[in-house]
Length: 389
Image (cartoon, rainbow, N blue to C red; front, side):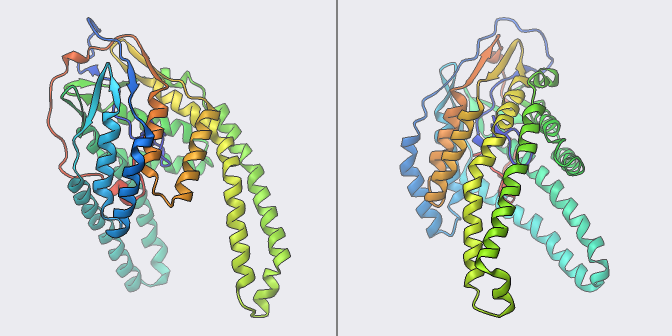
């Protein structure tokens, strides 16, 4: 279960299938099952697929990614088991490709209209025209997150029964926009509450066949997150000022200002930029370490809020273990230029499933099949760089 840079639970960024269900009418549980999760995922088995997808993406100028992503999901889903039965992913690459084409149309048309409007209206009205565009982009990113979840839910089955995400993508987009606004005016301090609210909107609208999930905010809030968030927020100040000091020292040492004034070749500036990026890369593990307690806490908090009949869930993830997973994943992605993405995704999925437990019982055997869901994939989410897996 995950959070997306965009306010979503970071377990979603691992692309795990839905985990729990509840009766549509919410009647008390009887004759249910204890839910037990396990995994047969071996990240090493994804190395060949990583090489194949990477090479085909180069040859096809990244167009292969839709089919490559589908194959990764199919294998990951097969490696995650609930009560001994594997999940199944039934999506197709062509559906993701169609969704991408639709996203190009949805995003491209407003940008063209804005460009023409600015040209005709003149620079005086540019701000009035561009501001609605920014609001539209934030709303559209939330819309895209919801449709990505809806598509993935409809293409995920367990014991032959399909998941389905109800609710409104439009409404979720406005909620996402509002939370982003509150994050801005509170300098980010609304983020923990916002992540829980977005998680509640998604989990409460999810169903397994004709049976509904529930998200209990009170249970989620029992897992404190603001202490860890404060540590991350204030702790980030240290590497931030450290970066500024190093950048100033480098600028003085390389004589960047004098070089610009004398019109000398731009090598000092290029060297300085290279050093600055290297410093940022070195500081990244420190910043990730500072935020690791919050990332682990919000994962535990959101997992605790998900319920099914008499069953509840716990994600036993610790800050240092999560930090090491993230840092090593980023390291291998960096040195392989992204080729190992399937390996990283399988590794992350295994990490989360191995730490996911459930207590109580759920009546999953009573679920009945529903409709297939949308016919196209998560093009908007792909366009904004958001992907569960």
